[in-house]
Length: 528
Image 1: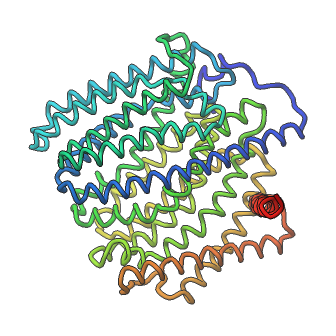
Image 2: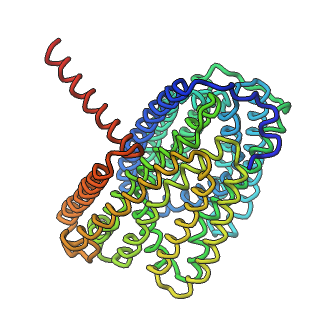
Image 3: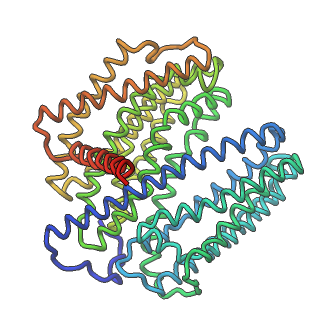
C-alpha cells in the first residue's frame, strides 16, 4: 500500500541490473549499516556515561524538587513536540534524487512546526501555575518555547549525512553539543546550586546543536513550498503513525495510574524500564541505521524487503539470549539495582523481558515499509496495536495484578510483530523461508536455554537475598551463561541442519571476518 502522490514526483529506480551487481550493492550497504550500528551503539555508551556522571554530581548539589520541576517541564515539551513530529527528514532520505525545492519545502515545514510548538508551550505556560501551583514552571516553559523556535531553524542539509549513511559525522555533530551541555550543567550547578543549572545545560545543548548543523553542512536553506505535495502526503501518514506510537508507548501511566496508584505504578514502570534494556541498549541503536540503509537500497534498485528479512533474523538471534538473560536475572536485578522495597517488580521484569523477543520484527518491518513509502501501512499497524493495547490494559487493570498486566503487554506486542511480518511475507519468498527456518531453530534453542537456566542456574526467576555487589556478580554470571548456552545450542541445531543460508550464515561470516581482521592486525604488529 503506497501513499497517494508519494512516488509521482520521484524519478523511477534504475532499470534491470545484473544480479551480481545487486548482491554487491546489498553487501556494501550492509557493511555501511553495520558500521553505523557500531557508531550508534558507541554513542549510546558515551551518552549513558555522561548522564551517569552528571547525575552523580547534580544529586549532591541540587535538591529533588529541582529535578522534578525541570523533568515536568521537559515532559510537557517532549509530549507537545512528539505530537507535531512530521517525518519530513525521513521523506527526504527516501528521495531518489536530492532536489533543492524539496529541501526548501522541508525546511519551511520544520520552521512552521517549531513556531507552532513554541506557541503551544507559551500558551500552556500561562496555566502552569494553576495546574501545578509552582510559578517556576512558567519561566522554564517559556524557555522551552524559545528553544522550539531555535530547533525549527536547524539546517535541513544535514539530512544528506543520513542519506549517505555517514553515521560518523552524525555522531560527531551530536557529541560536541552534548559535551558542552554537560560542562555547562556541571559548572552552573557548582555556581548556582539550583534548577537553573539543568535549564542552562539544556539551552546550551539545543542551541549549539542547531548551530553546528550550519558548520557541518554546506547547504543553506531557503523558504519555499514547491515540493509540498510529496512531503505532505508522506509526512501526514508518518505523523499519524508517530501519534499511534505515542499512544502505544506512553499510555501505561495514564491508564494504570488512576487505578493502581502512584506506588504500584512506579513499581510497574521501573520493571518496564529494566525489562526493556535489550531493546533500549541493543535494538534501538542497531535499528537507527536501518531506515537510511533500506532507503539507499530502494534508490539503487535492490530489494530492501529481502535485506529486512535477513536483518530481522540476525537481530532476533542477538536479542533472544539477552531477553532470556534479563528475565532469568530479574531477582538479581531487583536486589542489585533497586533494593528490597522493589521486590514486586521482579515478576514484571521476568515477564516483560519477553517483549524483546518480538521487538525486532516491529522495528525492522516498520523501517523497511517506511523506506518503501508505505507509511500508511505502518500507521494502520501501529493504530491497530495501540487500540488493542488500550483495550486490553483497560480490561485487566482492575485486577491490580501486575504479572497479568505484563502478560497482556507481551501478548499485544507479539500480535503487532505478526502484523508487521505478515506485510513482508511476499516481498522475498526465499528470504522469508530462511527467516522462518531460523526462527524455528531459535525457538528450540530458547526452550533448551530456558530449561537449563531454570533447573541448573541458581537464583534464576527467584527472589534473591544477597547483598548488592554479590547479587550483581552472580546475576552477571547467570546472564553470561544463558547467552553462551543459547548460542551453543543454536549453533548445534544449525550444523545439524546442514549449515543452510540465513541469519546464522551471516553471523558466522561476520565472526569469521572479525577473527581474520584481528589475526591480520596481530601479524602486522609482529612483523613491521
